[in-house]
Amino acid sequence: MTDAPGGVRYKRILLKLSGEALMGERQYGVDPEFCAFIAGQLATVHATGVQCGIVVGGGNIFRGLAAAAQGMDRATGDYIGMLATVMNGLALQDALERVGIPVRVMSAIGMNEVAEPYIRRRAVRHLEKGRVTIFVAGTGNPYFTTDTAAALRAVEIDAEVLLKATKVDGVYDADPMTDPGANRYERLSYQDVLRDQLKVLDAAAVSLCMENDLPIVVFDLNTPDNITRVARGDGVGTLISAQPGGVTG
Image: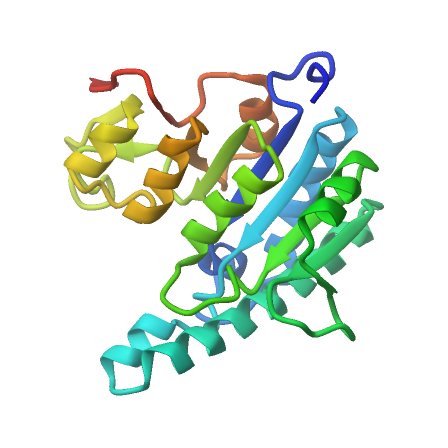
């Protein structure tokens, strides 16, 4: 890869969005207004020349693990969840196209009428041509989360950072929603996350990032321009990397 464009730290990023992020203030489904908010942030990043890949979850529509807990076959539930991510990917594609951003949706499960099949070389070519590329249907396999899919796609496309969008501004030592004394970590190592079982990403995703020295930034999606700030290398959220962590603020 060539040097990053002026003013930004990373040339190619992989953004992990949860399905719940697309709900906005709703209790279920997709909020077009919040999709437009995300699209606006991505348009700003795209204008700087940063190449953007996205992995989107499906928890706003269906959760395979929750269905399995109620008696459904786990693999079947996971496949339904993968199809939910496709719906979210198409909604996000529409929002991005409305702000003039070229987009491709690539699916790990074949459905040629609505999405391209995921082919790594083709995905990289889309990114090189300045197209935001949305990866849906997880890894195409049951028993793997979309966090793991995000780590896998990030490594495959040679992304320089994995951005994990959340509803809070980083990783805390306690739930900041219920504990006003919770402290935010500015930096953590992969080992910190795995040892303390911090519920940031699942262990398989963190391990894959650790093995490939791929940094992770956990940040608040609801703050305008945060995606751009992360791409610039600003001190936003919590950075997870090979460096020692433990600093709170």
